Amino acid sequence: LTNLNTSKWGKEKFYFLNEVDSTNNYAKKLASEGKPEGTVIVAEEQSAGKGRLSRKWISAKGKGIWTSFILRPNILPNFAAQITLVMAVGMIKALEKNLGVSAKIKWPNDILINDLKVCGILTEMSAEIDRINYVIVGIGLNVNQSNDDFPDEIQDSATSLKICLGKEIKRVQMLQVILEEIEKVYNLYLEKGFSEILDEWKNNSCTLGQEVIVKMPKEIIEGMAIDIDSGGCLIVKDKENIIHKIIAGDVLVRKK
Ligand code: BT5
Image (cartoon, rainbow, N blue to C red):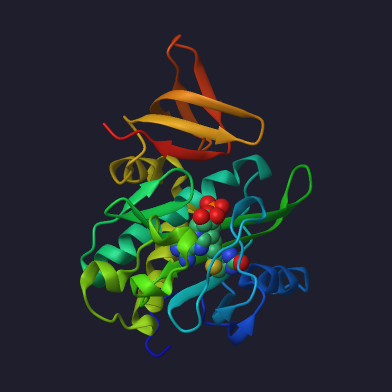
């Protein structure tokens, strides 16, 4: 990356890998060896890219941006869920700035264009009770896939920047803008707190104000997504007007 305009991210430690199981796993290894905040790992191909709950993240060779960052935020572990939302705001800004694309955030970790998933974020953490050792943020962005490149199971739900914009996108430049914008938003978050980011998150959300079905491992909740609280949890009001605070789950937005 030439002319990378970040203060720290990707400057000191930048790992470019041809193939890896998962950039998140690789980042974890580096983090446990003590590599600093702002370490960036990028891979051309992942043989075992992963989503939440051990789901698979399809990461075709040379077609996307498969990257992970090491963070060492001085926050309490129970605030770590905020980080995913902070990163989502950074991604929205990067897509807007580099390509003029206006994407939307689907709580908690999806970036959508035209209601289709173009990007997923996976945040993992190692922590003690009262302090974080490290947070790994993994970002998978579909860049130059055609529809045919997606396997059947995500044909109807996934998209790429190329499909949306009708042209090949330069991945190196896109990555550069992502690092710059995400670093800025992350630093703002550390300096000024989550509330500074939350408004922007809400302005770019396609989840709030919608009738949703939230699937969790042991429960399904249906209702209106009315807010995000200061911890990054989704607040859903059901038919009986009971308020549910959701820490993690999969959201299906009901079509009107
Ligand atoms: C995510 O999980 O969306 C988080 C994805 C994070 C991927 C990055 S790539 C770099 C880093 N290294 C890793 O190993 N992971 C991170 P989740 O919300 O659980 O969504 C997973 C679901 O998205 C899958 O079950 C599929 O339905 C769908 N999916 C899989 N691959 C996709 C793709 N390339 N584009 C769009 N949707 C996909």
